[in-house]
Length: 477
Ligand code: 5AD
Ligand code: SF4
Image 1: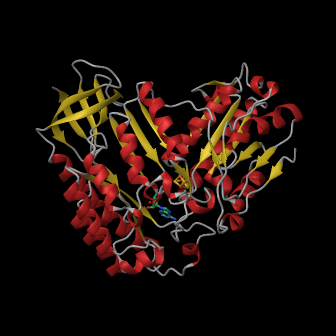
Image 2: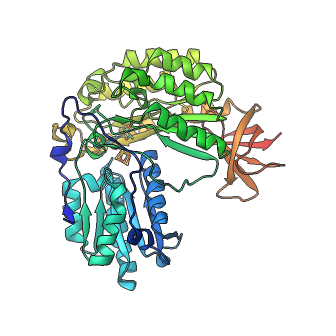
Image 3: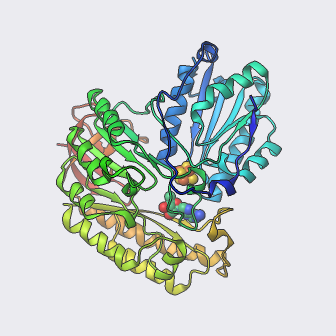
């Protein structure tokens, strides 16, 4: 095989009119050699970034296990270590480069160790070249479009003793039937779509993950039904922009509102979804969330900025008034809805007034939870080329001020739950204290509680005793 094929971020920008993603079924076709390549060997996958990456990590693990590899938690026992990376901000990338440097030690001790890199960073031409120069010992690089080729790539390394670097900058296809090792026996993610066509000017995702491709509703539903029969309690429907689900398919397939309703009808106790874009959020979707008790009353609704001029330059396609109108509609129709958000401060040339507009929306929406970031220029995106006169110290001050307000509202929302009883899906013993268990409420609030009876994966009633900044405390009723 031609074993080196590098990404091209410029090509990844390209969307051809009328392009139709192909559905490739039984995408993993292993030969006898590949099926045994990993026998007696161990793998370890390190995943960074969003839920889509976590799901990819589960698929990568599934493929490795089909090849005979066994999972190990210990890096020193691993024969292959794969870094499943994120490119969303520069600091995410810096962490990965640091980690590759650290993993060199393991490679020195065990020269047969395969170090692999995949995920969104692998789609970036400059980064891949840099990593190949800095770390010649990285033998395996593959992208977000060719996870299914992993067996062939590993075979090339083990049998021919050659590097395998294969990254496509395609618009992308849909791969059905890939194996996966799910990280939880009661909470599962289902990818309902991949890629993104929104091209917000700051964002690298449309380049790293290709054109929006929705899976057929029937494929999503059959995965959901399998999870229900396997005893799963919670399904997270995943996509970069779930509200645009189905827009790239024929209208018979239906949109996200229909998909939500039909997944709800499978009887799974809890449904969540991530991430929403305000632009594509229809009334029917709001109504579906309001109608079904098993669709959890929680929406992650990224604001990004409260300033119309910044929103425009971000290419977000809504105004602050339109955002508020949607927020109000959701809050009035969905009982006890919690809303979280993402906010970027310090977008190029963001003025004090722009920032104040963002704070105004924060004061209005009083978010339950929020993720805030300083703008990070991503090479190849339009915003990275915009002039920016705002010093980093100003951006940092803004972030601090914003975080102060976000923390205030997060705590205020949590205090409101004190004395009330909430349903909690038990995740397991809490990290810091094994006599205390933790889980999430319907509103997606982390709660730590004392357990009288029940086990991991059960949904139980918990009385909230304390609302804290980022979590709740409680006792089982
Ligand atoms: N700089 C800072 N934050 C970013 N995000 C996306 N791209 C960038 C960037 N270039 C944030 C957005 C998005 C979240 C996942 O990450 O807020 O919603
Ligand atoms: Fe990171 Fe975005 Fe890629 Fe997810 S899709 S891993 S957030 S760059």
